[in-house]
Length: 74
Image (tube, rainbow, N blue to C red):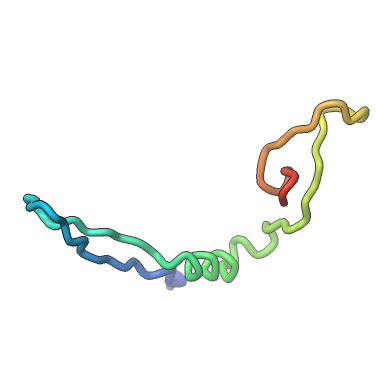
């Protein structure tokens, strides 16, 4: 059996003008999503929490920004 993921929630959004069908907002709790990813076995050894700097050459003249952990704010 596959592990269950975050549950979807829905809410009807009241409109000030009439619509043909109700406007429904669907969402998942972000904390449940993060907990699901951290607890998933496929991601167990594939999460990196160490910032790094990547350069095009050994002289470090041109820096490469490819993902969050290669940025200055990581």
